[in-house]
Amino acid sequence: MAEKRKFQAIKGTRDLLPPETELWNRVEQTAREVFGTYGFGEIRPPIFEPTELFARSIGLETDVVSKEMYTFEDRDETSVSLRPEATASVCRAYIEHNMHALPQPVKLYYMGPMFRRERPQKGRYRQFYQIGAELLEALQQSQGGAKDIPKDAAIDAEVIEMVMAFFARLGLESVELDINSIGHNAQNCRPAYVAKLKAELEKVKDKLGPDSQRRMETNPLRVLDSKLESEQAIIATLPRITDHLCSDCAAQYAELKRQLGLRGVAYRENWRLVRGLDYYMRTTFEITAKGLGSQNAVCGGGRYDGLVELLGGPSTKGIGFAIGEDRLILSLQEAGKGAVAQGRDVYIAWMGEKTLATAIRAAQELRQAGLCVELPPVEQKFGKALAQADKLGARFALILGEDEVASGLWTVKTLADGTQKKMAAAEIVKFLKG
Ligand code: HAM
Image (cartoon, rainbow, N blue to C red; front, top):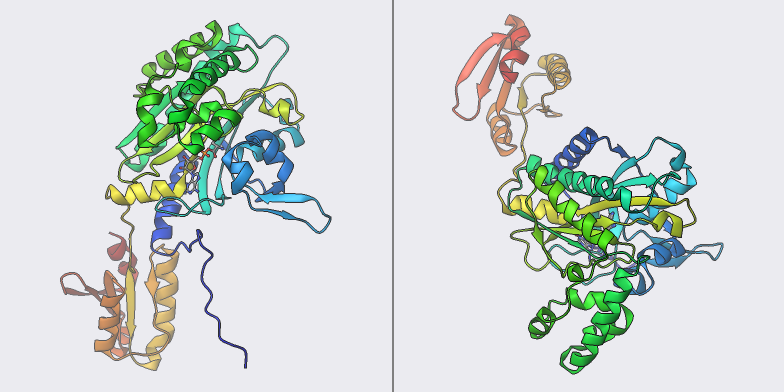
């Protein structure tokens, strides 16, 4: 006989179970509602894409692409990967469906699982869920350059306002928004800054840990991300990008802050916020929540003008964000905002075979009225039925015996206080919903 094997969910993945899934649904429904009021529509991209799409957009040297992707060879020998994020897919879809021909900007949101082979811990999983949004705008001939700065900044601010409105709608108050500008590649402010940063890092190389020494060569900006205690004092002395922005980037950053102020969005400037994906330029932001320990970033995003072009599309601007839904759920629970309705509305305690037909019809009617009803499949003794109703957390028991069916007056028991009432069948829905 074959050995019995006990299967378990793969490390870093998990089952989401009721009643917690109620909370997930509530969060997702709230996102749909809030994003909808800002004119965003839902896109559902595939879960896997050509590996090259992620490599080109997120960047070969990033942790995500260099070591965290689930990549496999398809039967036709093409390399495909489970999506580690969705911005690349949304840009691919924008190009594939000629969305530049639609009225601009195009505003899309998505939600679903993402995959990264990270070391699992609280708030960090290998299959995790994001709720994200992207705003894309193909450039018309008259557009581009310095005159777009106020418009771009206003768009960035509105996207950030939307995330904050979403958190507020969920009742999550203890979130903090960090913003930064990481400059612009083309206008040479970032390359010049990175060169300067690298030169400064060379001088202190011996005092840095192996991770930062490696990053210094591959992506010096990421050294600023370091959480190593021993590196903090050194990092504090490094040149800051906000002091090295070109005039356009500086103007855009100043206008972003003014626009956030106009919208009543509180923020903290954080010159060390560089983000871990290569496609960003100018605006970057992150939102952290309390009670999550080291994995406290619940949302990250920024501007990525030029990414669509890099993927073979027309010249297009973009800004977006993704919320880590797992972490958002954790912080709602920590903040006491994770309660979900449990139990049943009504338990139908039916007794006597002749009452079954009435009990079935009652269950159908109550369910049609939107109530959650438990109808035991077989007859139970009165005491057992009430005990079961209690165990399931039912609010009411509808008691149906042969007397009740004959008289048309049914008994409703409120389980919280044990009170009982007889009423005509037609009044029951109103009473139970009232
Ligand atoms: P990201 O910062 O890599 O950005 O991820 C966004 C959020 O996803 C994080 O702040 C975190 O809450 C959550 N997250 C990331 N990895 C994990 C994990 N292993 N376990 C649990 N949660 C995780 C992006 O993905 C960009 N695509 C965001 C964006 C959209 N930028 C522009 N548009």
